[in-house]
Length: 200
Image 1: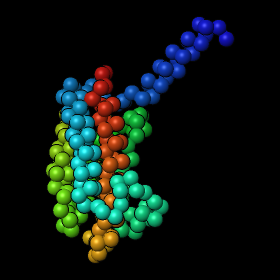
Image 2 (image 1 turned 90 degrees about the vertical axis):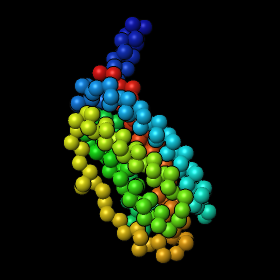
Image 3 (image 1 turned 180 degrees about the vertical axis):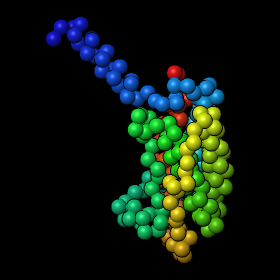
Image 4 (image 1 turned 135 degrees about the horizontal axis):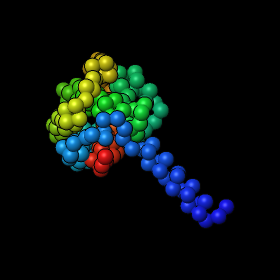
């Protein structure tokens, strides 16, 4: 295979990859305010990751932030701690509207979980305040892009309170909620990075 053929094939592959990763749909007409808000949200998301570490250190003694076992994951399901909404690369099958809807649903879900947990321990106030601010930023993304993202059917109800009757369960619930939130925030920040640098 000659050099020019290799170069042409590389260009084709790079272009195909760019097309698959580029936002689609209404993203092509996003105003600058959308990208600015996404950048602000990403900065806040990075602060939240630090808040998570601080909150875990202040409230959880039984586990390190990186502790993860299959038995803990089984307890998450039995205690009614739902999984985070899945965020994917924007595509024809995962539109900007779907993405923003899942971001909203996830942040609201963790707000609800932390509200329950804060009735049992102190040390979650900063994290809760930053999640409220993050929710405002995502709502602004929704408004600026004129999306109709609906989260009413995406936020599963939880009966976590009934499982917080002893200190061990409280520790488990705190640990699982904070580690899942950390993972979700990493996904959020990756998404914000794409949105904040996108140029139609």
